[in-house]
Image (cartoon, rainbow, N blue to C red; front, side, top):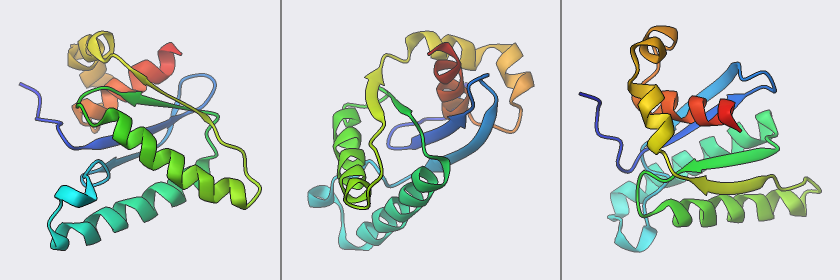
Length: 134
């Protein structure tokens, strides 16, 4: 049985050949501030800083969001806000789109995937499969 992924956000940076170059798992980036206790807002701010650094360092051309929760469009909104800041600094915005995770989930649960990415959790294996697909 795979671990519960609700609320987590996985970032997997793949090169043009589908090789994994960098990954991040965040626990607070999808939280809505108006529904978040004050103590957890600091956790969100920490995740936001990590996202900004990850995006700046990796300069993605495409960002794919796995639709594992109803908050997927909220995550897209938050990324759009971050890229507004980047555009003010003269950087371009990548294409951001959500996707259905059904097919990548089949791969992520597959023994071949678990063997190839034994140190990666389920959510990252799903992101990697879809990144390779596109």
